[in-house]
Image 1 (tube, helix red, strand yellow):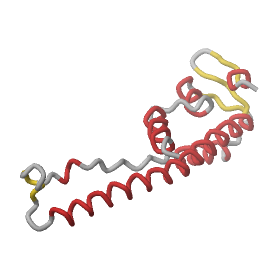
Image 2: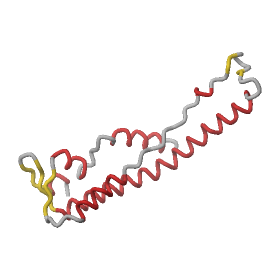
Image 3: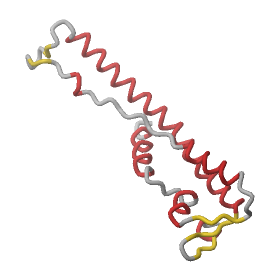
Image 4: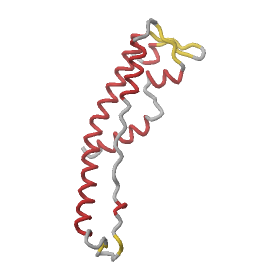
Length: 139
């Protein structure tokens, strides 16, 4: 069922059945957690590769810190240590807990909260997708 079809949109907010809201948030949370887990595997491989490259360069240039090919000081900052992908699963868990404890059968959400919780459109989503894509590209 389309996420927009499960809720009644009203002026300034969306009224949604609590059970349906929980289902949508859990689905989004599980997808996010799975993506993070898979991206972390790719990140570890990329991170290890860069650390090994740095270790090799240090062994080669440690005595005088000079790159003998160019006769310049060796620049260890030239290595690109990848950023660890951010895991936002706790944000989903906090929201789930809040709505699990609610005594209301229907929840009123602002449109921006509906976009986050149901449509899975968070402010950090683009960066998350870039990390996931980059770390899974090598697989």
